[in-house]
Amino acid sequence: MTSTDTRASGGASDLTGAQHGLKLGDVTLTLGDGDGTVTALDRVSLTVAPGELVAVVGPSGSGKSSLLAVAGALTTPDSGSVLIDGQDLVAMRDRERTRFRLEHIGFVFQSGNLVPALTAEDQLRLALHMRGGKPARDPRELLAEVGLADKRGRRPHELSGGERQRVGIARALVCGPSLLLVDEPTSALDRARSQEIVELLARETRQAGVATVMVTHDHDILLHCDRVLEMVDGALSTASTRVSEGLDD
Amino acid sequence: MFLALRELHFARSRFSLMGGVVALIAVLMVMLSGLSSGLVNDGVSGLKAQPVDAFAFAEGTKTDSAFSRSIIDVSQVDVWADRPDVAAAEPLGSMLVNAHSSTDVPVDLALFGVEPGSFLEPAVAEGQRLGDPHGIVVSQTVLDDGLAVGDTLTIDRVGTELTIIGSTGNQHTFGHVDVAYLPLTTWQEVHSGASAGEEVRADAYTEASAVALQAADGRAIDLAAGDAAAGTSSKTLVESFGASPGYSAETSTLMLIQVFLYAISALVVGAFFTVWTIQRRHELSVLRAMGASTGYLLRDGLAQALIVLLASTLVGVAIGVGSGALLASTPMPFALEAPAIGLAFILLIGLGLIGAAFAIARIAKVDPLKALGGQR
Image (cartoon, rainbow over all chains, first blue to last red; front, side):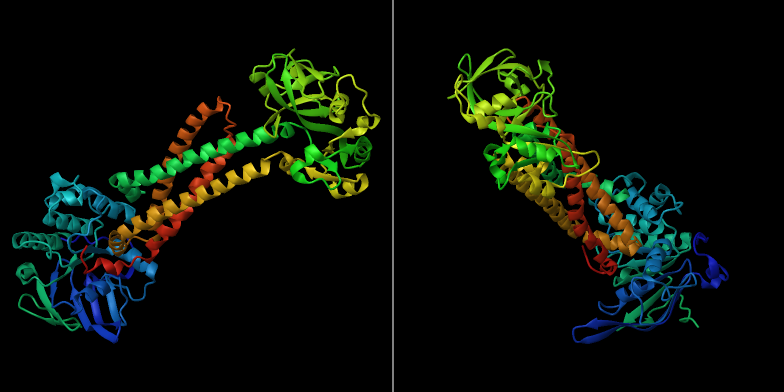
């Protein structure tokens, strides 16, 4: 099932199905540092197809967050290409990139990072309000789908850690993104909750046909991922089993 | 305003505290503006009521005592009257006297001597117009103090008796003293210091305090040229307010207090929104990562500030006007005037918004990258 939308900026991306999803090509990113520069991403190439859940593991400081920042249009790489749905993020201006994030990218942050003032349902409505236009997904249906039908009126402080993360996942999906970027989703959760969250992510990834990249250092949750990649000193490599299609081109 | 309204509701106690401060300042602002208008009325309503564009005083008169010190010659009135940019010029006599009623109630009066039938003659709401040499038309405030039309007043020392023949129907005061209008001739006799029945020195009848000037239609009076021709020092009506005893000191003190309050109000609002925005920094970085534009977040923040300011200022002004209405019936010089209150309302909101804008501008600097990795 594919729900990838054709709403905005269709153009080239719709010509070939192969261009859907995320495609990083030879991305290099160096970060300034007191003592000079650090290579955060070293010629990273990665293709994630719609409906695929890819996990990226690695020690702290290995460049996992930089990978999310580049794939999520938050940082422009020094070289290389970033294509989402066939559109080149590197060529975009800041304002276009912000708009692109709103329409095409969903973020799931550590411990949810919800807005304290908003109820679960309003967290989703805020995302829709920021984007404007017709809702891609019905917020109530989506909340029911992640198991929070009866808690949509609660604010973050009235929800458990797992519930907050479910709201965060629903919020990331409500605008119908083509790319879902997940940052350490289980860092604040116990084992059982962590399993539930990753199962939910895997299910939503397939149902919504969204390309998902999940950064984590929690090895217990890798079971549900289609592919597991390892990041060491800014370089990405195939870590363990599962489906491993070569790193494109 | 999706987020603005929900955050207002969520953090209502914090916002009400800040709104309470703004509301209290608004109350104070209304009270001060009432007091300020009241004092201005008390000081110069007798002058404001005159259909006069400017006054010409004796040459070299200092502003702060012009009406009491200046003595002009009626011939100077004629010089002014002949000028092409002057429609009418009339002598005005002005002096402060102590008097007492027939029942020995002391009364202070500002005697304004005017030619009956001239443009300076006051309209009368009750009783007769000026005409009787010893009949006076008084400010309504004299009647409010217990005197009535028909009562006779005796001026202390000179002993001249004056009878109240009419009232202006509204407040005419000068230097916090009630104005009594009387025929210029009678004023000249009292001014000369001649006691009742005594011979008046001949030149007394050529004296007055100032020349009241009305500009010709659509023209401004060339005061400097007129002064040169008539040998006077003239001031516009508004400048001449400064000649009312205490006027400048009172208005500048109140003005200073109001300016400080406006600054305090803007700072309070700015400080609150600075802290509020800093508290929201993480949340804002998450929203920016999600793709919220800076414009969206700025609009939302400013709308929030505007709502708080509007609501709290409205409450404050309402309380101020309500309690001011109670004060208006007391002898305290207090007058609520819609333009002054409107100005305070607009300034409080405008300056508050500027204060808030400086704080909210920080939103533009929030880094969406901060949403990744770090913990709350």
